[in-house]
Every structure is written in structure tokens, then in C-alpha cells.
Length: 65
Image 1 (spheres, rainbow, N blue to C red):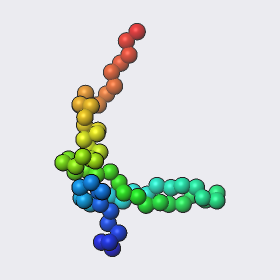
Image 2 (image 1 turned 60 degrees about the horizontal axis):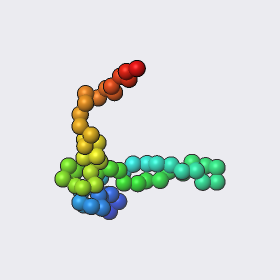
Image 3 (image 1 turned 90 degrees about the vertical axis):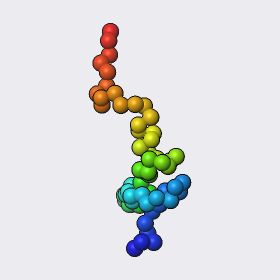
């Protein structure tokens, strides 16, 4: 089953397989796709995009009136 392993198209590192679904003729059908790349050195990395905003403690700031 190694031939079914998905890889990042940019860096070639293995990525997880995720299952999405779409509706066809009234039935939900599974679709297996590649997950996000977690290689920090890859330009397509989802970790870079999430970390580019900076860490602000995780809680949103309160609105002031």
C-alpha cells in the first residue's frame, strides 16, 4: 500500500490522507485527498501560514466601545 501514500507536491514529504465528502445523486460519497504539509521548510507548509500572524496567546482581544 505504499503506492497509495500521498506526498506534498512541492517538497515531496509524505502527508496524511484526509477524507472529504460530496453529494452525488442524493448520496454522500467519500473522497480521499492529500492533507496539509507540515514540513516547516516547505513553502506550501500549513504551519507557516498559521504561524505567520504571530502568537497572541490564543484568545481574541475584547472589543472596546
